[in-house]
Image 1: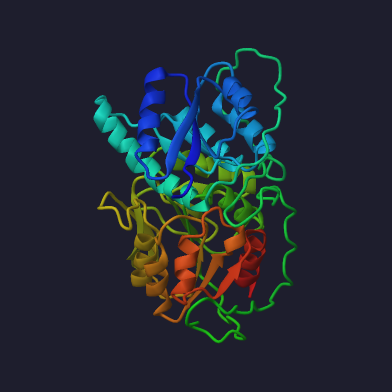
Image 2 (image 1 turned 90 degrees about the vertical axis):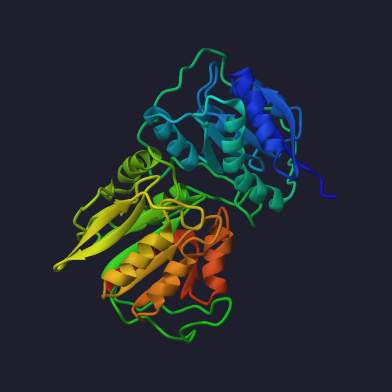
Length: 407
């Protein structure tokens, strides 16, 4: 029988520590081994015991979640951290900063007043995340002393504008050793302008011969991402010079409220104007539109123009917004060449959308490589279906997109 994944729950509320513990232990292969009421206590305990995963509250006295996360990432890179956040605009800003600072993922605290319903909602959020982490297996590193700053009360504050060159701290991704860099890496040099990008051989039946090139210039960029996506999007867009000559649309799996913070963070960090998409908005060159959390984003044709459509329809692949919904609507409404990109994430969302786009013969698909993914799920399914034209490391993604858009 596999050894359970060892989890520490960090929350300043006794009741919520119990709810999080019961919710986590409802997932097979999970054992909660300890608790802490704030970040300082948690770091002291981590210096004396072996833990695989920390479920970390955002708002705490003495030492808040973001500060605690940064200590864990620096001192214990083998430990995965899942943030547990209340739903507020301030917390949304901080959660996005946490995801860019090395957190594996986040869940929101349920708003249910009934304890059983609250636990049920939290189990539904935690189960897919903890299941993926459990499949990674135990990866306990050495227990090392942690050096903390002098103790003093430190209320949670909104994060400062990050420096795109330095603000991402290293984290451990699936398939990599703890010392492998996950962020802040040197940006790859841009390929020579007008150079065609070769198609790589993918898993499964390749749609295009491996020595072919894509000789079309895309008229739209579509990106889908999930777990690990906020940091991946930051690095991808940072590799594309500002002033993108085509419209771009992004679906990142996130609940309501958090995507507005993500759009603002991407704008600050990358030099691009990233906006949370509104309903019936014109889709224009140079605009980067991000699907709002909790709503599907699609497109419709109105004369010669494309406009956005937001709806609250059923979840697709367990997701709203869904990558498939956006990609399928582009397939139905847009006749020009499309560059589709599938980044890190759990599940299979995006695969059917890429398949639909590929039927036109005017779509080129990039997938993030296994080694550079936090979770190699969404890209893996696209590759196994033979739909990926090029599997590429995240560090090279922005430069490759730039080269294709100039071709």
